[in-house]
Amino acid sequence: MKKIDCDKCIQMSHCCQTGSWADLEEAKKIVELGLKGQFYHLEKDDDFPSGYRVGTCIDCNPCTFLTPDGLCSIHIIDYNLKPKMCKDFPYEKGELAPFVNELCIMHNLSKRKKGKKSSKKSSK
Ligand code: SF4
Ligand code: SF4
Image 1: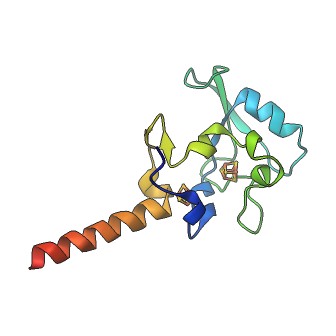
Image 2: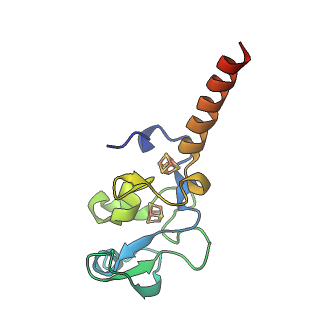
């Protein structure tokens, strides 16, 4: 399903600049890893399996699980424990996620390339 390949991303931390959401049960397992990051903003959300979600940052700041090198500290330890929302991004429920334009650098690059191609065609 994924058309945008994160393995080919030129700046993987770009989509982590405003954090993410984790299911409360995912967050409990991540907390056990003892990493530096923290969770904030516990909210009820029926789209998440437990019925609750928690954020990985305060307001619109970078994810607190991001390392100074721009890597995901959860992914480094255990990819399986990475929040599903992060694994799926830039997709959500099989579609491009909301905020993909703001957060996914590769999505924007491919849009720009397509735009250039179509403007070349139309200039002939
Ligand atoms: S948990 Fe990891 S992948 Fe998700 S936003 Fe934070 S650093 Fe990025
Ligand atoms: S979602 Fe977009 S910005 Fe984030 S790692 Fe994948 S390609 Fe890069």
